[in-house]
Image (tube, rainbow, N blue to C red; front, side, top):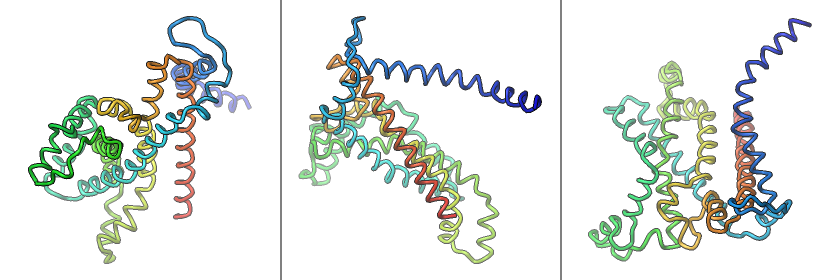
Length: 296
């Protein structure tokens, strides 16, 4: 009994440092943000007015722009899950094969994620500018002047342009994770499949795809969390315009703090946003685990 108790205490002691760090940097700030969400406060004056759950009620019943920003972030996330991750996987699969200059390709594909988001946003803003942008200049030179437009100021194209740039900027992270996952697959499995007469497509379908499911789940969860919290790239490209058509939740929270002076309301928005992200990630994880269990 004493040995078991001693072993339990030792285990808790090993966990204690991580728990303390998690409590200081996550639990405590979260609780403070939640309590601030119960007040009406401008973020400057020391006086706060307790309003209870009114800030949370306003989010659900009186702020359509907030839910518009959620839907727009969700649309960017869907595009990222489909286009960005499929592209990252295919490029990782290609670089995992024996091809010439594959190390150079790995370097090139990983360059966009390490570039400054502000710089990338400003460069793409110049490329997509309506009057002297590079894209419109190319279209004019190709005789496609009827396709030119002010891409980032047109409500019909602004959000999709931001989504495409976001995918271009972020696919390198998925590429790196997928490549690491592909390199953990034993090469003996492919050799055995080749000996048995399996084609490259069969080996890809029967070996590569099943073994990459856990990696794909991880990449999908990271994509959702990263894309839903996109901020710097969008604010440097459009600032949330035109007319809120590229507004995303983090920009909306910033607007509540900076433009409206409702610091408590911004804290309530942050809490709701965090709960939604956790719920979406948990649902996706559970769904993926069930799908994986059925496949097994």
